[in-house]
Image: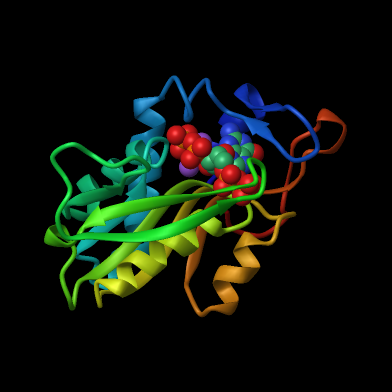
Length: 194
Ligand code: G4P
Ligand code: NA
Ligand code: NA
């Protein structure tokens, strides 16, 4: 997605060889116009899949997920990282291991909002090692719903999350795929379409 690539080049910062800072439009300040374009792009890529629901993870997945939900005309659920005061019964949970933090956290969704036979599009802001996306697929499958696809805003293609998810048979659509962040330089994977 060219608009997204340009935004990343203009406003993204390669903090290290492996971390891209995009808090000017995605992780802290949010660019609504860009989010809308992102939502449209996800909707285009998944419109044939009969999506009935979108599942994401708080907090940075929510903006792109809501825009995709708006365009596909389906509700959006975000998995919570902390237990909610009002949301205590019927939780479907899964564990996410974080390589950077070296800790395991539990994420949860209420079973009220995820029903059998539902066709779910999983959306997240970043794909690195794939642990968050895998936990979301686990939650969807525990609900006996179907993962129809995984939509990612920025994939770090030099990490193995994309491979892991594709090997498991999931359709992964990443709107920008980063090849390298070495030497403070942002390079995208060369492919016809991004
Ligand atoms: P890991 O697999 O690389 O260890 O990453 P981990 O799951 O621990 O992810 C930690 C957080 O960092 C996640 O956000 C994830 O989306 C984000 N993240 C991973 N790689 C990058 C990167 O290169 N750049 C940026 N900006 N973020 C990255 P989170 O803690 O769930 O936060 P949020 O969703 O509330 O923003
Ligand atoms: Na994040
Ligand atoms: Na995230």
